[in-house]
Image 1: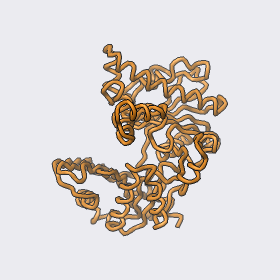
Image 2 (image 1 turned 135 degrees about the vertical axis):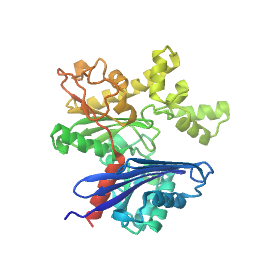
Image 3 (image 1 turned 120 degrees about the horizontal axis):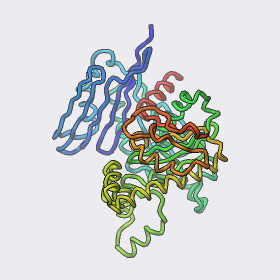
Image 4 (image 1 turned 135 degrees about the horizontal axis):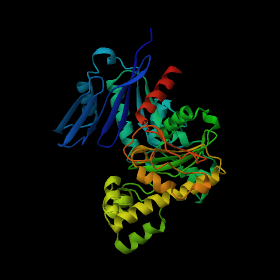
Length: 402
């Protein structure tokens, strides 16, 4: 008889908890999923969906005082104290930054918690809430807890890809280097691509496009990540919903001198008020595309800047792979849903062996699909990502190995 192993996945933010429960038995099934938002405010809300009975619960205008109260609300709505989920096999935590200290998913110990805290300066918006979530989960759920790091997938980057041309002591003393993020998504996509292409991971050369509100790209050579667009924080690289991506760092000094802004103000602007939103006042790609089609020059400009940055990195990654590419893989909200953006990214690349089929690439056809034309030398895949499932799978692997 196959043992049932319920695994709870937690993604803890400063004022939110995103969660999902997966049951590992003969097959893997998602039992429920949801999000607690607005923690610490009188406008807290909960969206909870039981996938076994297709039942949705939405609660609004609550006062969920802290993360412990948020997790208790999760327990209440999901009946975690009853039935097959009463005893969790493990809890998996999404952790953004492990720095150079942790290169793979890890059973949470005092040493692991110390490492998460040590690198909080590199992810001040993410690591402290994660630590808080871990502490609360350890109080409520007496089972193994595992930290799964966004940076882990990118620890294979060679020095020439991760080093900044800054004084070397900044790397030695402060750990300032490129780390990369969205690693949990990339690991999931690499595994699915291997299955779809019927080729071992270690033989695959792939360029990945994780295009959502947060956007990045990564290039894998023979199954190993050799470069990615994000840096010491998720701000570097592509244009995103509200993040500017690559920008001349001298802009910071100019803004401080000319406007009186402080460094923290500039950082907030670059993270929260820039990107697509900064260029055109909108951050939903569907709205931007429609406005551009309707003649809005600023929305059209935002689209062009967004795609130009992607194509610039695509060209660099084609060079890094020497043109030997098995597939381009599009994923995340925009990458999965917008044939319009995929078409713009791949336009005019026939001489590089990349050509998409317009019919296969149409919007609205959500799910795994191949969208390259018959004459394309390089496959172009759309693969929906599932970061929560990836965290759950990695959590089980860690606990099973103990």
